[in-house]
Image (cartoon, rainbow, N blue to C red):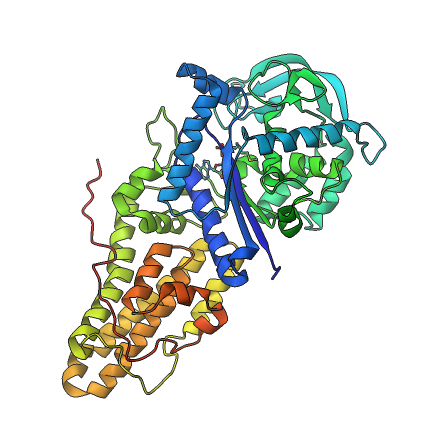
Length: 515
Ligand code: MSP
């Protein structure tokens, strides 16, 4: 494993408040960041998220409310960051493209591109006329082949604008060969494989030069040498991954660049694997190591849309289920790289079955019995065997999370939870209490120890719950958290004789009526 880990989410457009699709990416990135902090130490992990605030899409949204774009951006960006706080997102930084630190870096990048030459000896930037289509909702130039039969954008089902304007162009076509080499050799790793193949397909159909400035857009960063033109919002936005580190001369850049993971969904892989690396190549910066695309989430079988009225606000889920349950429910619904559907009914069912009935029930019944039979003192154990084969669970869990499959890591944890619950049913401690008190001590010790191991595994996923379980077990969470994972996972790490603190129920059962 590398010694440092830098993970990013997309910076989200602020024309509207966040929905659970954005939350899915951000919670997943948070899980990976927290896991890597456990492995590498907090100082060696950097987790960045933020907001994308320039361009016509945002300008129009501000105008609709009769607001100045900056005031609108301030208000909306705060909605994103407070939502992330409510979801216990542990980002180390929050970048906004309207911040001076970002704008300065973008101007530096543009100035350097302006004087640079491509590998073929051409000027990286040149003036030209763009005649074609533009979808403001995507903030992207479109070709006919990217539209449906009615001529609408495939993602937004709206008609793109017809543009004819003089722009500065980026000679991206000169980077086609280099990009193909980086991607096919996995120096820029794209996962899942299907997404990588799509990008190679795009390269095979030929990389076109890209307009990197817009004369008709005013809300953005003006080109330093041509103030009538505004930097194309994607060139502006993609630079955030380095502007946030403080630019290339910063210590943060030296420590963390190239990024280990740019996480996103399939809608914007193309921008991150073609445009972003070409920009970096043009000014001699190493490209990111990996782009991971997760699937697209639909709600009750449909794309989330205001018109359909099925947009789910993650804050509403936190109100209903609490922070950790929302995190669990979001990532456990479907395989990470594939598209998937969610429904409030299923959230409700899974909350009751897995959280209240599975994890919550295990902790509550085991701690109740320890209180009842041992006055709350962790019994001593004389067998010391890893009877649940927790070491194997760790192997599955780590392989899944290190392979960026958080849903599978959770499955490994729940197999262990189910095993422990079954062990209670099989061993019947209430019967042992009468017949065999020594065996009862062993059984309850095994269960408490399994719960400790489960709490450790849950740390990246459900940080507050994990902490709470440590406290229930009478352990000092802050102290435990500092210990290397290798020591913590050793079976029978729970000291006997400690007094547990059986608290309130972790996940009270919910009666949620669907409308
Ligand atoms: N501002 C650009 C990104 C610039 S990054 C340099 C942008 N913003 S966005 O607000 O539209 O965010 C897109 C991302 O949000 C997706 O790639 C994905 O991470 C997340 N999702 C948005 N809707 C989603 C679903 N329905 N399902 C899963 N993820 C979703 O593009």
